[in-house]
Image (cartoon, rainbow, N blue to C red):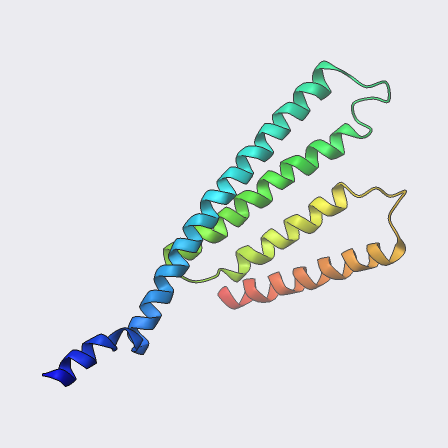
Length: 150
């Protein structure tokens, strides 16, 4: 009888119980990340609306399209990136699998955002080369993943 009691006492150390515990922790962390990402999306949206209101109500002497448009596109793409990250998290919660194609598309969107908000007067040549290499690598990765799934 004592050995059965000891067996039950240490049963939580079995591989199955341990993996079940880790799965539960991953689910909790994913849910917390989803909530945090919703807060981030809300904050970015408030910032975007505020920025649009200021840009439209108080036109600058340098013109609306000079700096404001790239900043607006940057904020829009920030919202899209945050939504894609949220989609990554929720897809993981549903399937417990990281969707590589979605991660690559999110990365491509982030690089596109970087290029759109890039200040060409301050950027170095090596930074442009780095962005070009990142775009090439992500595009090739996307093509490979896409062809594997087709």
